[in-house]
Every structure is written in structure tokens, then in C-alpha cells.
Amino acid sequence: MKKTITLALALAGALSVSGCYTPQQQTGTLAGGAIGAGGGALIGSALTHGSAGGAIAGGLLGAGTGALIGNAATAPQPSGRCAQFAYDYNGNRVCTAFY
Image 1 (cartoon, one colour):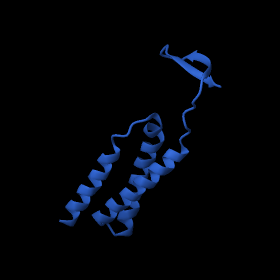
Image 2: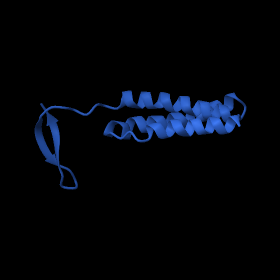
Image 3: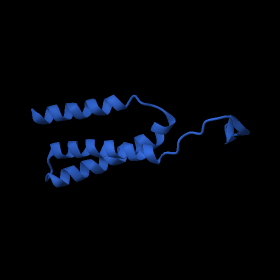
Image 4: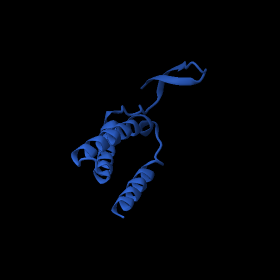
């Protein structure tokens, strides 16, 4: 019963943050969270000698820590007016320099 409750809480936590979508969260936060979850699950499982609860707890802690580090490491999008425009390989007009 404990495993079922723990798994349900882990899935609920994962679903609660899966709806977030900004360019910053798309790249850094999600990648950091995924890498952290995998590493945390491996470490949690190893420290508790193969316990599923340890793997889930380690995965949740690793996902949170990885998401925070990934978000901090991602450069913020520049704001302000565009000083120079160019075109990308699809022909879309993009700003390459800001005021």
C-alpha cells in the first residue's frame, strides 16, 4: 500500500509541473529536471539497497534540484527593443541585437 501511495504522489508531483511551458523552461529547467530525476533515482536506489521508495524519493529530490540548477543556468531572454534584424534558415525575421 505504501508503494502505491508513494507512486501516486510522485506522479501527481510530476504532472503538476508538466504544464509549464516557456522557452526557458523548455530548455534548461526540463532538461535539468530530467537529468536530476534519473541521477537521483539511481542514487536513491543504491543507498536504500534497491528499495522502490528510495528510488522514488531520490528521483523527486533529484528532479527538483536539477530543475532549479537548469533554470539558473539558462540565460534569460533579452528584453527591450531590437537594434538589428536578420533571417533564420526558415526565412523568419529574428532579432540579433538589442538596445
